[in-house]
Length: 383
Image (cartoon, rainbow, N blue to C red; front, side):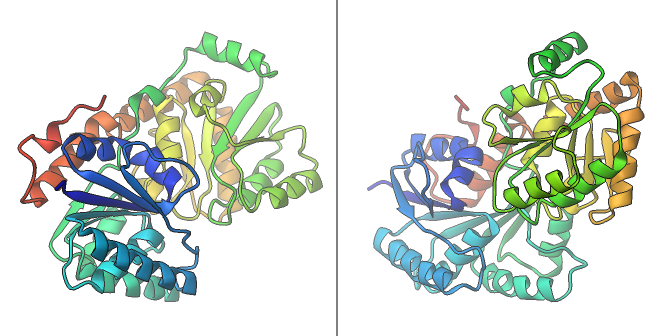
């Protein structure tokens, strides 16, 4: 009988975006791979999938129901390994494990705690489920140093704690273009060489803080500057209305969901993220890998990636004037200054590529699983 591993996340898209190489290596090594998530799309390398429509509020009754659904699944299928991802899914799945008599080995990857060290009541409310779940979390992996400190301070793991450089970004997505190519890409998109293009790729939600960026960009008054907003989500219509009210419809452009982000970055000059909270943001790693200097809010996930005046600029997450100053500073840099920032970003992004992190993460699995297959799991091909 094949060994079984269960990968869990809030959505199937999260699994598809970040974890397919890991599903593949377990699948190739004889494991029966299961995925539990909100199944809005198929998941390759998954032998079985379970639809779990989580509620976004962690204390929702819908999530309590999901705990018992997962508990029954775990009892019926006798998984050897459970690998949890995203804060909500990790809490729900581990609470289900907590209720079991016979428990699988639990690996929890923290893609960013939904609180910071400085938070008050919010931190306390979100720490409670994390602390309860810590007693059955055999291996905990975190992606930024503040989360590492939090995990150590509150002992949010039972056995092993590791720091990792994310799950790895496909290096083929790191495509930077020469100045002449960027000029041509701009012309193809209806812009000129004189146009300066800022870009923000993110879902529209309160946490992503689009309104601060829209207001700051409008107030900056930069001639020949444009702001591209790629993505969709709950606050999209509010943001469109705000742009109309500010009279910026000819300068702030909504692109909707973009599949080929590297093609988008090819004609942009700088990437921006005013996000209020991040674990280790994929959009910024990708932008840096494509050679763009970045302007980011000074939060734990961004601090892992951006260094002030080395590969970008940082501002306080709620300080609109600081963001305006950063937009102006980046706009008025000469080309050579921006090029140096971009080159430093390319070098920084290499550490977060799939080639750099894959074997490290698989070795964590291998070293903490006593009953591995004879094949060296941590050294499998990425193809």
